[in-house]
Length: 136
Image 1: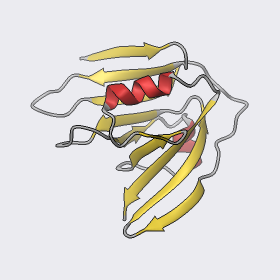
Image 2 (image 1 turned 90 degrees about the vertical axis):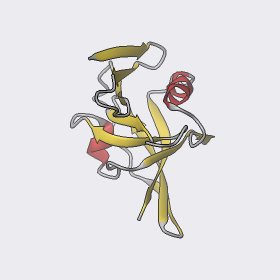
Image 3 (image 1 turned 90 degrees about the horizontal axis):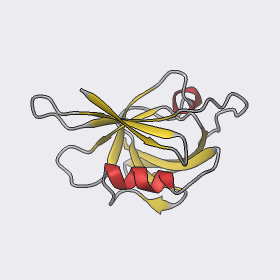
């Protein structure tokens, strides 16, 4: 069963998949409003830090991310899928398994999914700047 959680201030919705057989809830981040004028941005400030690569990227709505809480950890979210017509997929820089580190410089590593959604709700811009990382 899926429930819709809609944040009208930013036009972002989260689909909550109820756990089946002990799985972790999966959620989708996507816009309810089409933004066809804005082109996806390229990743900025790529950096190597040991075996982890992180980068910032500004994504116009609709973003089209499926996020999931990191299994076995109380906080943090990772990308588990993307909508093909969302800006996250179109940019080509984001892939499954990447952890969301921050939104507009606000640290997301210590936030649970609901807190990440609350943070997104504080921004009313047409695009959002994310920082992602992936262990190499």
